[in-house]
Length: 314
Image (tube, rainbow, N blue to C red):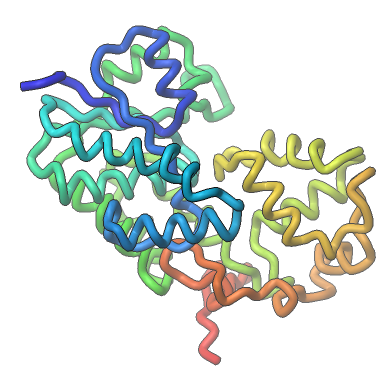
């Protein structure tokens, strides 16, 4: 048999950190953000990657060559690594990581059946109120996480795959009710990530989702001198999502009609009305090409009073 351990990590920072710490084995870096854009259940298929490339091209102006070099080459390397004693997954507590994690597990279920798969997941650390990313762990802490890694049973793999199937379905309604009901799951951060996902659908009250509302709140409550400062503050406060700066810049651009200026950062009258639920901005934001997983973002509304999603039937 070849190399005994294959590490699949959540990003380049983790891969580089583990290599610095002299972890033995081969490394694959999973460079995706499946928490954004349309997803389908068939991870790794030609149609899956075509759909993902279309999203990156449209939303982030990513060139085909960059997509091939950054994502597809690494995926092909994963496909070629078939001889291994153990596959170790390295992911974090946030929405970004948890969705990537269940997608990878779904792929492993299909293409690496019977392999020994284990999970290292960072978040809670003794003595810290803040949830930690993998690269924030000390050498001692990361070694301890690794020693205590969880071997995933077939039931665990089936469960993660099932949540992925629901995430990719055309309705989030079943996902909304099912994700809370597995207290024995080794995926201790998955429920909070799915909860955060549900809140990404627009609210009944003002047509903005939780993230968009938090952008307006952050802009309104802080004396920020630039868009960069606004993004910096959002990055610091939004640990449950795990978004990067590009994602926040993208979201701010969608809300630009609610800002008076970005130097300094100031909401206009309409922005303040939306923030105070005096004006509903749903119609101006609605985009039938916007997806969250397999569901159209603007086909569902979150009712904060009942804390439930409603499907728009018209």
